Length: 353
Image (tube, rainbow, N blue to C red):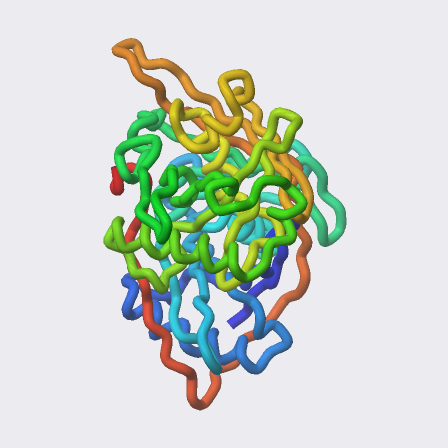
C-alpha cells in the first residue's frame, strides 16, 4: 500500500495519509484493517507518529476529497487503540497536500481552493493555497457551516459555564464543540496567574487538567481513555488576546491544535463562556490572537444574528499554516500485527447539543 507522510506546522505529529479505498467504515472492522498499518509504524522510523488520515475522492457536490481522521492512542509496547471521534485540522491540511501529490485534486497552486468533507463529524473545511513551493505549501483553513450553526448548539453542557466539583471546591469550565470538542478553563483557577508560569508548568498542572478532562468525558458519556474532549487552560495575554496551554495525546501540545484554535475563537464569541469573560467585552471581537509556548496565531470567527433572535456561527478561519511533504511510504504487512481497539462514535456539535 502506497502512502504519504506530511506534517503541518504546529502539529505534535506528522500524519500518515492512506488511500481510503479498501478500508471499511465501521469502527470494529476499520480497527482490524488498520492492524497492519500500526505494525508497520512500530517497526518504521515513524513509530512516534500518532495521526492517520484516510482520503479519497468525494461524491459530495462541490467537495474535492472525503477525509476520515484516526487518532492512534498511546499505551505500552505497540498500539493499544484508535480514536475516531472528532477530527484534526493539521491532518486535514496534510491530507489535502497528499491528495494533491496523488492527483486526487487539481494541483495546489496559489489562489486555488478545495472543500474537504470530514467524515468523522460532518465538518466542511475550505482549504485555500497562499503559497506553493516544492514540497512546501502555506494554506488557509475555513470551517464553514451551511446552514449557519445556532450558537447554543456549540455548548455541549447546554450553558456557557459549568461549575465542576474539584478537590478543594469548584472551578468554572466551558465545554464547547466547534471543529473539535474542548474544555476551556481559567488557568488562575488552577493556581497559575501569569503567562511564563503557564507555559513552563509541569506535571501538577498537566495532571489537574487531565483529571478535569476525564471528569467532563464521564459527564458526556464518553470513554475517559479516549482523546476527546480536549482541554486548554487560558489567561489574558495583556494585549487583547489569550495565552493558551493545551493538552494533546499523551502530553502537552507544542502549540494548540488547529481545531482547538477554531473552537477557542468560536467560544470567545459566546457570551458568558470562560474565554469570553477573560477577554472582556472589548476583547471578544471577530479576530482572536492566540499565544502558545510554540508561537502565536490569529483566528477569525464570523457570527450572524437570526431574524428571530439569537446568534449563529457562519464560519471560523485560520490563515498561514505551513505544510511540508516529508516522505512517500510503501507499507508491507507484518506477520503478527498488534491488536487495536476502536473508540468510535460519530461526533459533532449538532449531535451533542
